[in-house]
Amino acid sequence: MAKNRYLDEFMKTFPYEGLTYDDVTLVTQYADFLPDDTSLETQLTSRQKMNIPFISAAMDTVTEAPMAIAMALAGGIGVIHKNLENDEQAAQVAKVKNYLNGLIAKPVCFHANDDISFLRAEKKRMGLKFNGFPVLDDQDRLVGMITSSDMRYAPMTAAKLSDVMTAATITAKPGTSLKKAYEIMRANKIGKLPLVDKAGRDTRR
Image (cartoon, rainbow, N blue to C red; front, top):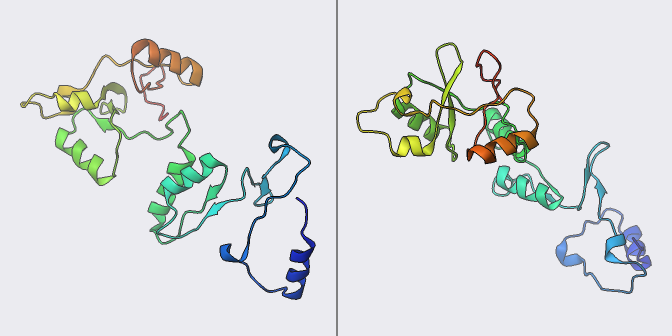
């Protein structure tokens, strides 16, 4: 980036002066390079780089998971604010880190003997917006999946998840690649693919 000698002289005159948006005016000038030849990459820390030099403020009215995700997608970074309980702050960070992760490391699971009302209450308590949960038996083996359709069309007499869950669950082996998993999901028209071992245990992925 070309230096402006007038700005350099100004900053030397006021070495402790800070600048805000209103103090800076960008003037378009001739450049002997093309846009594709430019790079806005910035070294944020000794190990972390950003594609654009923009950081959203660590304020409770500015940056939580949605803003941090949007900033990351644009090439910048968002700093989750600290005006949260420790668990909630960690949960916000986890949402950002797992946004583009095709594998769910710790899925929310329920048991076949759980009441339908318990699932609805837990979903509300945790603020979950998605549907589709693995259903396990009392030995934590996968026995089915509960979907939004299962819940929506559950008979009035149904009380347990075992009464409404989809028992014929399509699964894959642990270690299945994302590409292969996607092919299986498309072929079977399903939104989630549990990875289970030979014993039928959910691998928590």
